Image (cartoon, rainbow, N blue to C red; front, side, top):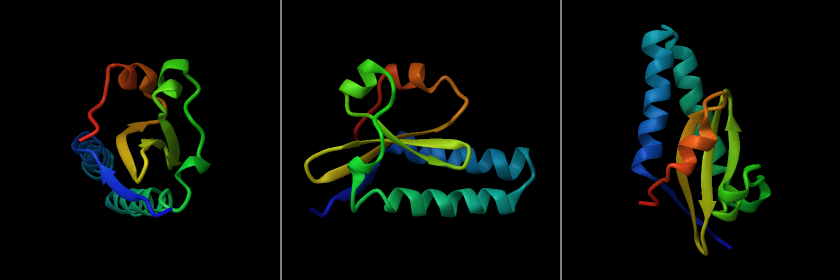
Length: 108
């Protein structure tokens, strides 16, 4: 099956903020560029087989079908629909991402 990719506005903002933090706060523009390149590669790699990555280890989030793939020190969270993979958030792996995701997320 061919899936379409949708990255929510919130997830796009998360990705931009992560790259900006690395580039401007940590003063490492190459690492920021590397993060963006790997993020694009990992997210696009979801499309052929999006259910190949695990659901999160939280009962509520798992019931919502939230899955993730790791991108360096970040986690890209997504849900799989009939014909679409929707990236919902892109969060630092050591953040309290369970609470952040349980607060809700837009699918648009």
